[in-house]
Image 1 (cartoon, rainbow, N blue to C red):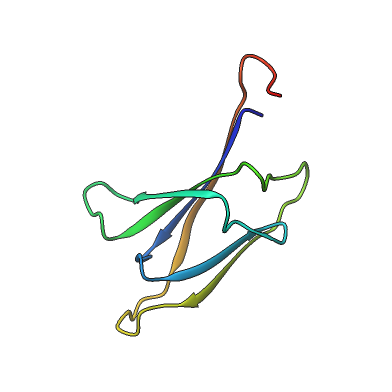
Image 2 (cartoon, helix red, strand yellow):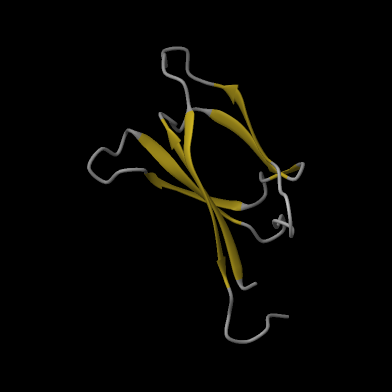
Length: 97
């Protein structure tokens, strides 16, 4: 595997929300994460979280993804909804070392 990206689309997610995300029991705190809007025409509907998985990798077979909401701004009345989950695996032409 050259690269593995875990993509999570979460409705009503805002930057002030505090989440802990674990893959097979290991927190993704040290993995690089970028954010973008779910919809280009409505950028505040939610966010894509794109994790570049370098240390924490999915394993063959069943995997467990845990999302824990630690805190949310008090003025937010809506719930978070995980709309979509994608694992994008890209293989290189040559073996990586």
